[in-house]
Length: 376
Length: 248
Image 1 (cartoon, chains in turn purple, orange):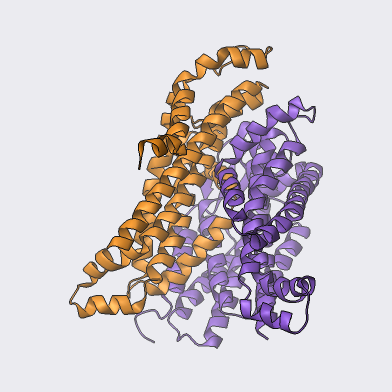
Image 2 (tube, chains in turn yellow, cyan; image 1 turned 135 degrees about the horizontal axis):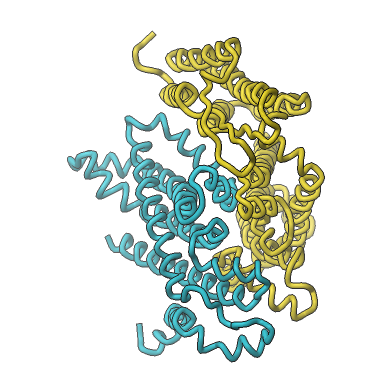
């Protein structure tokens, strides 16, 4: 073993995890949901056996960063990081349950910064390890972590944590707002696709049409969401459509979604090799056949890349739409901010982030499958 | 540029319009009073729009400047021999971070930094690093190895290669990253008024809460113009940079 770590990234991230867990506030305990809590470190709050597991994970992570960068060692490091991440959640839930068993019911146990920091470091380590792996493996690993966390949540492991108690109190609302958020995104992206794809094809086929269309869409993209939402209120209420609610939100989201869709549709089509189109024409295909059999399949990866940008962007902008009464996860965020209830803020913000990450992951997966099909 | 085309320049008359809205919003009182007869007073009566804009612009400038320094600095370190192991990490952070909704980043900075301008500044700063970092990494790493070798052959030190070759060649890409960061930050700073920062978003949020649509429109016009003008300025800067690079 050398004295210099071979995997400096794993070494540094491992050190951060250990330092945060050793000295930082892993959880906080507050007398009620509106006050900020006092910190609890892992050492003083966790059961001895769980602490042992976490310490071993930390030591293994550091030791692993000195091992040569073979495939087997990389897989071992991945397994350690996954175990550590799952145990981190398990331990947090366990501590919260123990505290809640003897504390007054208004007590709130929340995640502290040490939990977030070490969780983020481990997630990044897993992400980096998966970057070099095959598509199926990425899917399997992410699914394993997601299923394990869901099973723990189902079994009530996290019921003592403030976030879950906030969820339990608002379970019905949560389902409604989550559905509404997804609906906002799907409707807006659907309309934007129906408008943007033909527009993109038109721009690709027509000389000089791009300048005006892209100029306009660029301008719209520049206007901050809150301003565009605000500007749509007056004309819509004058038209009797109601200035507040889903309608202005969907219109604004469609306007934002158009630029990436039109741009990537156009780039996808223009990017197809001229030679291939000539060859297809030489084989006797008409322009419709050329579009469906040559341009569409070859331009697909670029189009999917655009779709990925659009969906992630729309999920994020839909959070702001709650300000004009469109509902969605943003309504928890802004309600929570309004009443100083941090856990309510997180009940909106964390699912919104997870939604964006999930959509990004699935579309990246689709893109890499398309890419493989194309090169095969 | 001839005298005639100067007046055709949208930057000039949009700037004039912007200044008019900043200092002369009260001149539009009759218009808003006619359009929204029930709203009293018809013009937002809190801080003046000029004041709100100064707060807003100050927040954006300071946070984006700090983000640009950190982003470019980290990219420089990660493209040196000593730091190249950390490049995948930084690339991953920039990519994953940008999928986070800006409003959600603002929201989660409240538990960490409380209410007011501080969490808004921190959210703008942290989120602003990502596009700068991503573009700087791509820009510096995209400098052809042959150009670098030529510099070494000419006897340039690593520092001179960075200053005279890598940074100038990467400048348009880095500027594009700073532009994204600033434009996103203008929008997020506006939402920052929900957590208590005083920005041009304050009349919008106040108007939405108290159902005074004219305030929403006034705030929205000023923010929209501010963002569009800033983007145009970056467009000009980009053209200058490219002309300069082409001449050099």
